[in-house]
Image 1: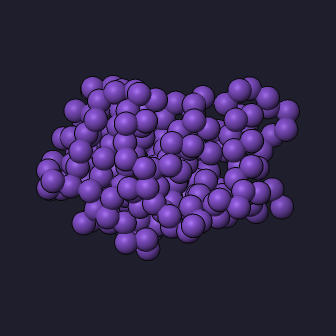
Image 2: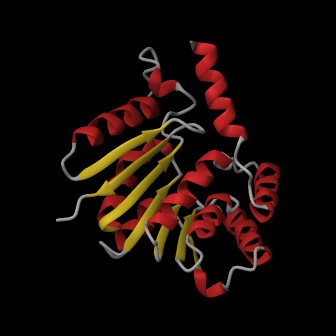
Length: 211
């Protein structure tokens, strides 16, 4: 049974055909050492962006632009605000967006620590919020993300399974415990509709319940 599940997971991973401009950004990310999200996760967030008709997106953790490109692949008319504390990452991402012929008006780059930037952003203003930075602060970022998301908006947390550690009860490091608690608590919360996908290293999806 384990091998069957592994085969299904492998098929899901390898079945994604990544657009050429995103594949190029992925290669640049690997060269930079900015680990990009899996293509299977990218395709899921693109579907969510498309299905929600997202017009305003915020991304915490730019990396080299892979996740942002996937989001705009799904929502080509959206405006993406992306935050990263590494100027080099933002510079590479900016070039990736330029190479993909994404208009300047569709992107907004903010250099800074998310913990300092997020409190100054307008609440209930975004259709999608993607959180892929500083997993030790994931609970704080999700709280901010839910504040920023409009009613009916969605917060996305890739790498939610933390290299598989979250599923292993023996693993008790701080990040694993925080992610495990986040998954369990959001499943019970009346404030969100929560789902956990296991593709890639996991994708936690939290849709804010309409008031």
